[in-house]
Image (cartoon, rainbow, N blue to C red; front, top):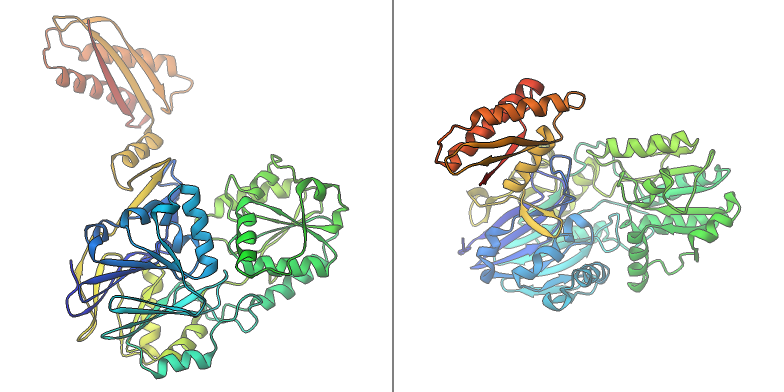
Length: 545
């Protein structure tokens, strides 16, 4: 689809879900993309860690795509770049800190020379065809969180990205209410807005409040302290450095992603007064009340530093009365993984503190009071909720309408929304799905590989080998091998029966090999179902003598 004399919006990710943000704006025959993120797999994708957006729509229209503008450096906004950006063949635009993170990703993937990356100064601007982009800083949980003021022939769009209000942000200088009001004074056609915390009746809170809470908790710790937080939350890392200095503790960092974020932040002009760090070996030799470890893994990631510490496979060791502070929000879906680590720590006698016990974390997304304030400053004609599940976006639409915004459109991935001219409405539907990164291969999330793997995980697999002579008669006894089928104590007896059923299915004189294979497959599967109630995948090998 090519945009005509109109202004269109199309989400290929991030609408109807939290994560994997990909937003397209179309006007006068051209498209621009805002963000290119990923999300993390859940157990319904066995063997997969990363989920990518299906960009087939814009790939088919890549000649009309002018570029990709990035709001900030979180994985759900830039994480898909190393896997998908080269195929799109358009330049990227980002502020310095975000550009540094992207550059590292491109280098790791070996495609730095294939993707053109333009660094836009903080509060800078860029013109792409009929679209003018201006970066406007907002507080978030990573340096250089930005809104985009997008000027178009049909009016101005205020695309918030991820944001919150913070009167004590500690890192970065967000736009003031006066600056935001000035944007609204010029007239805003549409506010495209983060919906994540719309059900929170309170403001998200300040990083300054977290500093106070962490300082109080760490002062009360008698022995070794480990604090786990999102690696990308450089503001929190800055806070922890200040807390360590004030409590007389030396900082040790555990986690490669933390090392990268700290290095990139320093190169972009942040964390300049961050205290000197010591390595793991030195930290373990220091008095237990003189060290603070900052570690990755607060979401239960099996390969991250905290999990390895909890299960004694890391040089950093924790013992009874040491303290672990979870300075991050528990993401829905990670409860089991986090609980597993917390149980391991509890077994060691480690003291744990979460945001339920003390103010050691605040969200990076706006609660209802912050959304209401933004509506008052920006005063859009249209509210377009994004970055949330359908329940979040529908609730923000209701909130916006109740606050006097004339129009609100609740859309989902793939919905084409015409913002102008005329009344805003959904006018069509395009492909918007999911891809999986399976090893080094990108596959459809609902394709045969994933479907087969789910069946294997649910039911197990049986292999049957049958030897046939030239007349179609059975030679010897069919060989049966079982994997993941629940016949542990009766395995030998089951294999005998399955082999007998396979032999019965071989009809002497049968000429059609595929028909024979199917008869054997069904016979063996029926046997497995009688024994287990399961319907395992049965693979049949016909050996012709």
